[in-house]
Amino acid sequence: MGQRLAALVLVLLLVQYAIETGLLLLNLRHAARARGVPGPLAGRVDDDTAARSREYTLANGRFSLVTGAWGLALAVATLYSGVLPWLDAALARAGLSEANRFVAFLGALSAAFTMADLPFSAWHTFAVEARFGFNRTPWRLWIVDRLKGFGLAAALGLPFLYGVYAFMRFTGSFWWIWLFGFVTAYQIVLLWLWPSVIAPLFNRFQPLPEGELRARLEALARDAGFRNRGLYVMDASRRSGHSNAYFAGLLRPRIVLFDTLVTQMTIDEAASVLAHEIGHFRRRHVHRRLVLSLAGTLLVLFVLSLLVPWPPLYAAFGFDRPSLEAALALASLGGGGFVFWLAPVASVLSRRHEYEADRYSVRLAGHPDALKSALVRLTGQNLSNLHPHPWYSAWHYSHPTLVERLAAIDRVTSP
Image 1 (tube, rainbow, N blue to C red):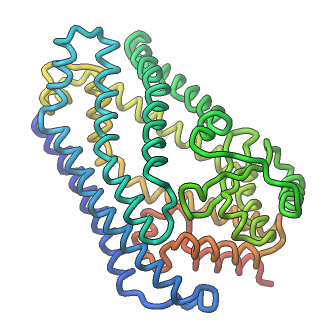
Image 2 (tube, rainbow, N blue to C red; image 1 turned 90 degrees about the vertical axis):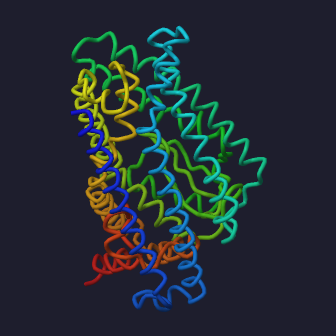
Image 3 (spheres, one colour; image 1 turned 45 degrees about the horizontal axis):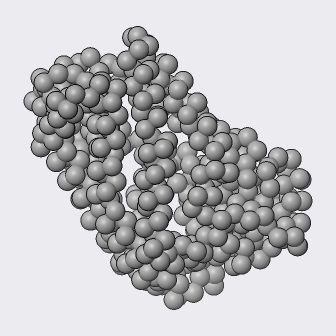
């Protein structure tokens, strides 16, 4: 049974890799063959931007080919080389208690994967992003960011792992329900801490200066009945030339604008972008996604509760005894092959929400042309792919393509 399970996991991981790599290659070939500007964007996007967008898509796609192969190789090697049972046994021989062994095992595994990703993160930042003029992060800041990330992961992650162990070990056969409550509470606390405690460790946030833009955006939020904790500008240009805006928080979020967005957009365009983001909250998209995420977490924990006492799971990967840390590690490393096909389902839901938020923006801000020009501007500034393969975008894209969004806005505003 153990050998068949090991073979099944390997086959599913390879199927996942084959499908996702095949879609990526289709997208790269589609982009490489594309020329000029898509017909519906003629007059909105210039040929130079279209050419740079294509090259950026190809560069990122080739990078993803390398990282995808590396990720598969690392997962397979970790699962099938015997390193996991060796590490678990070594920690047991060291005399660690069950709780400390649980935390040390999962902490060491997480740290090892993070370290393995560092060269690729540096390559993307200082080669791919720099080649297209996006990277503004000096090496010193990049290293400081990584160190802060490690410290934050330890400060938040280690107590979390001790909590996970306690609920799995001491709350009986329904531990997965208790653990679900703990994980939910932990996520809510992180959402509460993020805007005022965590995010400022990496970026500076200043109130949007008084002026026409601030007055327009505040009036827009009031008209929508959108309760918030203020308008802030983030120093995104310190690290990157990309432009965006987001909300931080769950009930009364902060409205955060990248400084690149503030300097590059007109007031009407910025108002339309903010109205789009307000639309996500007013239509309860954020809360729906959180509920779906929590439902998925509950299902995963239930399945995990069935796997924890199942001896073939451990025998399949070389463990001589069941252990809580082994179950979590094996589920994390091998579970992707069982659930990756849900990605396009999540993408469909996300794209539907984006259409709804665009419609809300048109109604609230009353400037459909400004929303369209803002989307075109963001696409050009971020060099987003103008020629995605339809299969690739259907599987991966959380947002509709630019052509699809502009057409949908036109349908809303047409008499």
